[in-house]
Image (cartoon, rainbow over all chains, first blue to last red):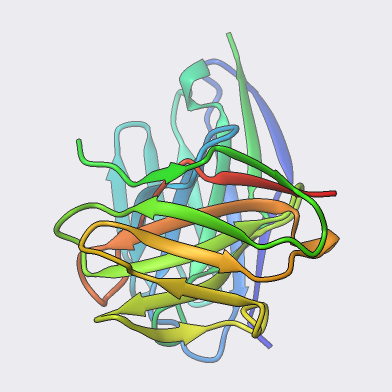
Length: 109
Length: 114
């Protein structure tokens, strides 16, 4: 059975304190790993897609990396506006995404 | 920037009643989806829709659920006879390509079944 596990469940950082979020997956055939950001009361917002081990993508203070069993979302010098829940999802088949439960990030000024 | 719009933002209904959740996907997108998120739980796939047909559905999407694209702009999710466990945030999403690389989600409809 496909599984996506995100850790930690919650993370509190001081502004400027860099850290990483983890997404480990067990799937039958990975066809893409996705990172989304979700603000309270909103729908998920697309951040990155990664397709193969070794791939990296960056956007502002965020960098996503992928290995054969996990992905990391690195946050460099976060700001309070980076506070959100970060969701990892995998695509294994046709058209659907299988989401993890997310990491709730709080950045304290 | 174009966005997916959903109405209503909140819907309260009695158990056993029918509800219709409405969505306007981004205009040039061809693929449409419904996901749901029960409070405190993960976002779950319900159904995908392309070319006026369901292309994939999950086990959650049973005979009580149906989707429709009644015109060129709207995409609806109908729950025929709501149950308490249908209470959740329902998200509509759309994407330009079948690759599903970048889904655009709406802000959701919070459905409360009493």
